[in-house]
Length: 294
Image (tube, rainbow, N blue to C red; front, side, top):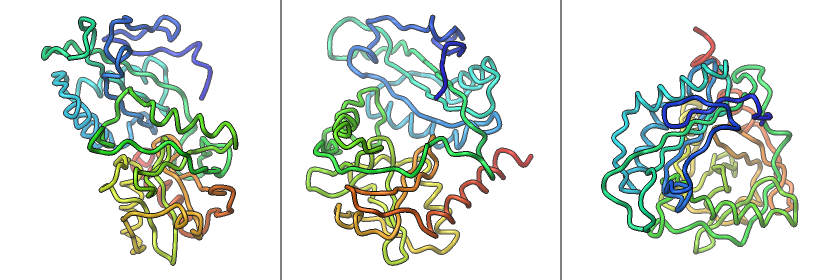
């Protein structure tokens, strides 16, 4: 990510310099994490799979019981305005919708005065021949911090309360690993702190099922679609850490990383391979056709 000293952010209808962007300390997103967000990526001036992101944002708001009354077109317009103000066509985008400022009590009021914030940062061009944003294949470490059960907080809800992932990442300070491998309460693999997990075993593409506390990632969905088009066998179910440690190859996905190969899991070499290479190429081709070949 770049220095944001010259960046412009969108805050409540205004595009302002990053060092002047602020929200009131009474905002519930600040006080309680009572806000929804999406991390997106723009290619060639267009947001990648905006409709899917908008749908997931709406699901988060439903979980929070936050009827903000803002249309998808309004939110997309805020993103487009921010990208244009920064003269960016390829960028990281974070869209947040908070419940707004309310009296200092835990129970939210039914009436919502939402606050919209958009942050953007430049990223390399995507598509064919592009440079990844990551420095190299990821080292992954299983952590003690467990994923919150869906019955406590649904994994599909992307809220400002990201303490679960933060605690997982702080555990990595000892080993210096790049990403945490998080388990559910029964010890099955779920995902990374900010990524979905894939691995290859016996020529099948494996990924933890959404039946567990696993975020339905947008990039995850695209990768599965690409694999199906190539007739790659897919296994979506519960897996153990040993399943991942013994994999032939593995990679992580999120909107910013796209597909990032995994080098080691708990110090055991895994590395990328032909399936990771193929899906990475197909993903780049997909982005190229969708956003640059016009």
